[in-house]
Image 1 (tube, rainbow, N blue to C red):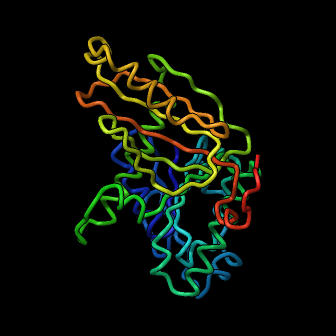
Image 2 (cartoon, rainbow, N blue to C red):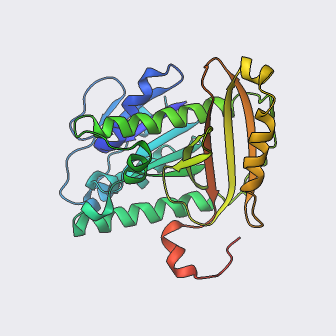
Length: 285
């Protein structure tokens, strides 16, 4: 799988994927040099990054197959994201969108972030992207707990990458048992999270509203799969407790080599999240 990071945030998260051999890493930013690095000249505005985005089509030809495109919308270089996605459109592309703390952004940054955030969700919903995963730095930090300033973002980035990687591994593995259902074709706006299996406590990476599908991926050791007589009931009771008339809930159980059991989860929605406040009580399919 290819991983393409845009801007300082996207490149930092992309770097975290380098510890896994399954990924080929590419980075796009101003002033970059080196293998698989693409330099974008520095511009003064968000609009200039879009209008004067260089063509990397010839260089992007070596990027083939499923591709993960990572960015945050607050930086000016995010203005180039649609032009770059067009140049990568020969591949199935999934976007990892890292949302900064909106309250700390200036007026211009806030406007830029809203534009990118909204447009990319529309692209995903229309099928121009395979999927967009929304992730909020503040929500991830809330789930992790107190973090020191030094290493703050690295810890958050590692949480994003480790979770995405394990979901990718499970997605390419056969479960011991499960009840998976495919999300609706337009339910391409997603987030991910972790579940404390002992406490049945969910920690989501984004407050995704109006989900249509929720999936739980349990990683259980071979020994527990063979000896824990309560495991199946505990899992199915939890899954059933989350079933709602408007939400499809499914799960899979996978054998792992780890002693500790764990669970990763995903939510899918068909609704552009910034439109939530406009919908009121309307039911959106």
